[in-house]
Amino acid sequence: MRISSRRKTIAFFVVLGVCLVALAVALNVGWIILNWRQGVLLFFGVLFFAAIILGLILNTGYLVREIKLNEQHDSFINAVTHELKTPITSIRLHLETLQRREVDEAQRRQFYELMLHDTDRLLGTVEQVLKAGQAGHKPARTHRVEVDFGDIVRECIGLARTRHHLEAGALRFEQGEKDSEIFVEADPEELRTAISNLLDNAIKYSAGNVDVSVQIELPDEKHVVLRVRDRGVGIPAEELKRIFKRFYRVPGRTMRQVKGTGLGLFIVRAIARTHGGRVFAESEGVGRGTTVTLELPRSRA
Image: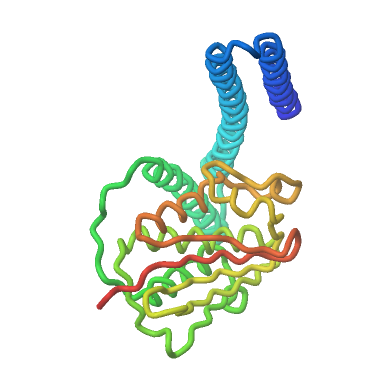
């Protein structure tokens, strides 16, 4: 209901802007016809009406952008609320069960494991919000060292398998002999955050059947490329550039079923830029999987 109301508001401002521009053009043309002999006044009149038209266009664009931004903020708040409320509710339920009745040791251990998992989920959500806040400001140069890119990738893959309880075949690492000992100058913690977000995103949008491959490639002597390919829900071509915006989530039924804050890829892009790299996504369409590529400069050493 709220989305429909906002779309009507956007349509109203767009139509209003078009009508005002058309009216201004009509008045300008009429004024020129009536005063074609007065050259000086004609010149300043054209400038004046051009300024009015430009102002109307900019004002309409600003209003539409603000309405869309508010919609994204509301979506983000709803997503974060869910990501915080769900594990808190689960932890509270398990604690109340342990408090009110006796449970055997096996079930008690199971409860502890579930509560630890929910705590990790809470911590992950909070860290994403904090990282997004840091990425939204001009970052200071962090402490960077030479790190083995392959080691960092393998470490993140191991953590992702443990966190999502995956078999080795569900998340595969494909690295050739030539790709061993590839060094990049980076902040190790930020690099882990970017790679982990790419892996979590691919797993999350695999629609239950996780089949993710991770590849390291060397396109030239100056760059290293990490490709994370899933065979999940896919992304429409017109949405490929938008998915890296803050709070943005691809609209659609499947995307609504997958919970998230819309910050993961935004954080990846921010980290890639601060390290002199870039990130982009490729997909053949809905239901045909997605490949996200992270490209970073190699260490000169």
